[in-house]
Image (cartoon, rainbow, N blue to C red; front, side, top):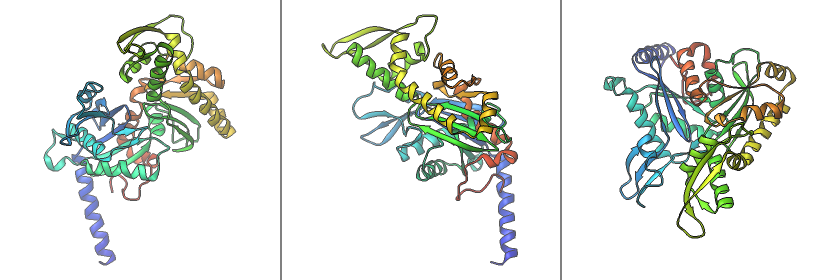
Length: 365
């Protein structure tokens, strides 16, 4: 093929791509360990469902995905398993993740003509994932029906979702506490200067409450009960109002049902180990930050995002430990997916914040 023919082929291919790009949906996905959120360009956030899939192990058939599947957790017969296909923010079950993505993509494109249902998809992933894990997310998304798949670091997406000036020569610090991972990042000039991805976040906090209940109260509770207790009375700092929550489970001595009334002090003690690890890593990142960027962060403050940041008093604890103002961003649960939406809406100016993938071409080419 001559250079002219090659140029003509690429030009025609680009025209076709742009034509379908205008007609199809651009989709942003926060592929979280606990919840998956989906943003559709010009529509906003259209899906916010648990990242749970119920599978019949005898037949391999998927019975439910999302909200309906989460209702089955801990309540299914032996041959039906309600599972999370993502662990610590990365794909642990490729096939199930692919099915879940296909379900969500089809759900938001079902009002389109069949030949327009292959959208371009931008996915937020933890900053600490390996190249193999990135490739697994890309391939699962493409196999689920995406025309193109692109990746963005979750802390970068959260910073954009918080409307921080990420492309300026200004230091921004984001702490995104999700279900599977805690992302700590220093961002400047459209890139991540320093980052740390911890496999300690909301799920680990739930396990802390389960362990504490077993050790202190001799009662075995489920993850859902632990999460409900964390949301209802969880705190990182002593509160003025004393709160209580009934923990219901199985007595480890008698094997019979048992209820214990836990206080906010109990849950705070249970969560203290995980919160201490997160705070210590925040301090470590601050110690490694270049002085000029640190001056900006001291002025602008640390931004908290993700569901884990809603734990009462966490912002106050981090501020006291670091000496830097801490601000909880508006609607922290949707920070990452809102960031993907902003990137999709202004791809021309924000394309440099994407993670480079050799097998994907930039939007609009």
